Length: 185
Image 1 (cartoon, one colour):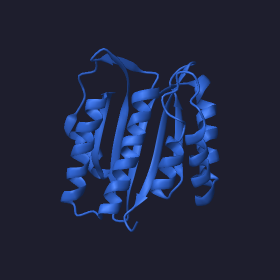
Image 2: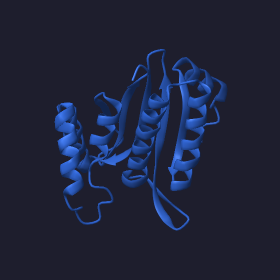
Image 3: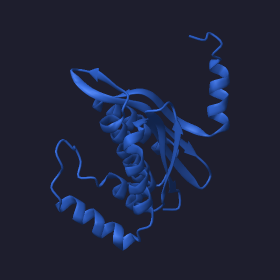
């Protein structure tokens, strides 16, 4: 382990990038609740519109749940397998940016990128219809959700989901999903 880590510099970077909340580690249901409560308190203290607070909270929870359920980096907490990753929220004068990152198998990456691209191409009416259709479709095998998460995020935020991948090695990449929630919404 490198002992040259400078926590103050890390703090300054987060300040310079307007990060108002971040968490890195194993994401359990308890962590989701705790960090979600912190987020609600933080936003209510900043007098964000209630509708905007609800959108930011919803998007944050959905993205964190994706890490919890689908990260290829996992741990066992309270006898349950959970995903590990990082979530962060940045704030500007006009919007909040919610970001989530985790390790993903490269074999799963193309499918996820295509899902993001497809969702980003849909109009609001198409998103609504796709969401309804997904909710009616039976779940496949061991899948936890109905695959409606990305659709829900884009519908709620009213903006396209952004994604980047960074190769880790031959088998894994680090996936970052981010979405903007406008303050005027």
